[in-house]
Length: 523
Ligand code: FCB
Image (cartoon, rainbow, N blue to C red):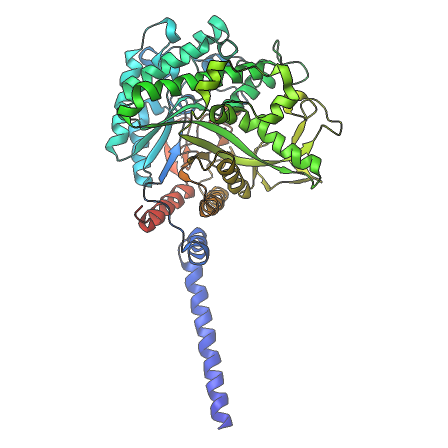
């Protein structure tokens, strides 16, 4: 008996050994690591999660970064055309005159999107293409015709256009003539422009964003001066003029009032008939207190006030956040009685651009330098990358960017709680790599997207009403002051030949969308 049972045991051991070897061999030869990664996640954590059927999966772009064709079909110069022409402004001395030539190549690019299986495309319109001289000149029908063709082509492919009216670029005319965002009259220009866009495209465009990241636009344009119109005080940057304490507040105020004017115009004149939604897109940073102290926890909240809720509170609640009012006092522009009435609830959704997170350190009770938290302009918060020499999340080769997926979940929950479960779209999320060759096997990007999308799902499970996700970006493109030195594309672009080549992330995203579509339940 004993010999028989020990024989069975050794047979069983042999069988087990064979089974392990076969499993290991088949695992190592099976598809790529990311497939295993996905299936592990799907089996362990994702089984019960479904995206709603009408969830938008898309890619995002902007006119200046993609289009090129900077003087084609009646377009004139934008502020970014002029700015990139000033030597020393862009890391590699480049510009967006050609960019990735999306103006001419968009049909091919839409084919790539169709192949990915996206059902939405976030793009922006070039204001200078539609109104080369703002409200001081005629509508440029060359620009209108171009966008009409493009919107029709997008829709023909079963893709929903998600359109931003202005993504940093404005007609240079408005800068030269009256100082653009520093002048309250820009509101009339913006309203005029919005009216033309709603009138010409609103029968087919059902998602409008007034602005892209006005917080970044005013902080870089008027506090540090690294974006046009390059204005700042000496302590904050290298500008010939400006006032880093006051001008960002003035520009922001004029942007908020312009947003309100455009939304109220849409609501009174177009929305009922066109049945679209209108919102704003903000850059978000999740601020984690650098310590558990009350001062640092309050600093983290203040950091949101001086970065995000600065713009969102006025257009939801009709006033600036308390922290700003307390610190800035009379420097903070006032809303008139009319503004107050008209600005509340002027959002159908919030667009959340989420890339990175930072530590927040209090500078009210300790001494910090201006530019490093030590000023009213910054709300006396230092947004630090490091704590005890270590970054929050994983650093990347890009200086402003560390990978912290948890920040996505926190940010979505923060917006959900503060703005009473307002619909949210993640209008940008993506991974940038330094330009170090072709890099088609972009594993870090795949890992990034997978982990941030997991965080997004966690937020949805907790109740955040997230309705879409747009990857930044389909293609490598002109990355503002970094020029072509940082690549964000799921497709590599050869900037000499304009050839597009898929990276690993493109097939990963395609697979992700396919899986989540197949699983999505009826609403
Ligand atoms: C966002 C911008 C977008 C792009 C990404 C990388 O802040 O909105 O245009 O540059 O960063």
